[in-house]
Length: 165
Length: 160
Image (tube, rainbow over all chains, first blue to last red; front, side, top):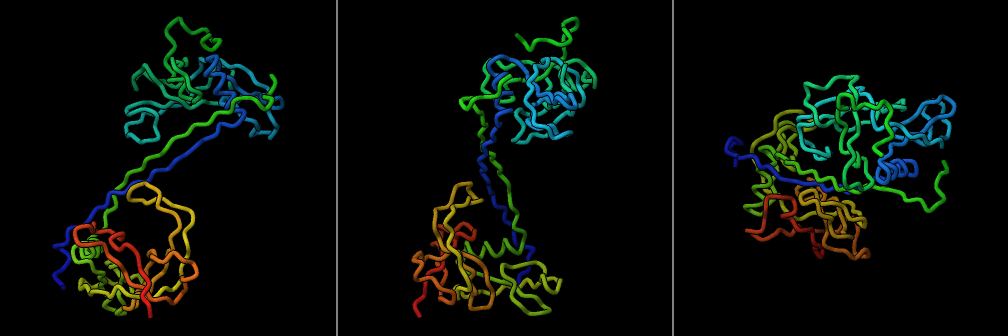
């Protein structure tokens, strides 16, 4: 043969992986999601020793390793701790780009909740700004039962709200 | 607040991650697949230093780290089973995302030209499988071949 490789057009193969997943929320995570779905209520878990309130709730305190069972309701309003703007679409993102993720420390919580930011442009976002949860009309028992967090309208911030009831 | 009593509703989220991607074969492997598709034959190139056959064809000899030749030689599709396993748990075909059929023997085959690779065997009777058995590749017909390892359907047993 020996005609060299320059005349060889490289082949490209389309390939595909389908990976089925089931993520189980567990007892604590299930209750967290049920409260949002059924009552638009965001619940946290309080550690009686170090007094941290975890949102999302956890069954074990990561600081003192205690088993946790003190449920507390936190606000559906909170403060923006951090954010990023996403321009590149990936299939695991729940929405198409461009969009923003934020970490929201809800009123009464000591930890941040990762969620989508909405009803604002990237230029308007500021760390420390006040946000409120927008609940989905049709709620199915997933974290997307909160659609996103939006800026609290001027004068509309009740500090610690009762979670949309 | 009381924790559940066993009848509480537990939630799960199910979804399928769909990952399409493209695999570029490069010039040497492309040549290999083209020979397979158009002529129904297996080819290898050689290392100019140690002289061994590189199969599937490679641009560099992995032992000598020198650029391999661009001369290709045809290989015989007959060989000997070195070892084998029987796949009972179906796995996904990465070209389609679909599950493969269950239960097929997968073997390391030493071709008569002295190179080895893995492929499936036609024989599914466990009693008839053995290391050392003689096999030959069965290719798809011209026109049905796509330039892919599945252009070899399987290796069938050759009676001694």
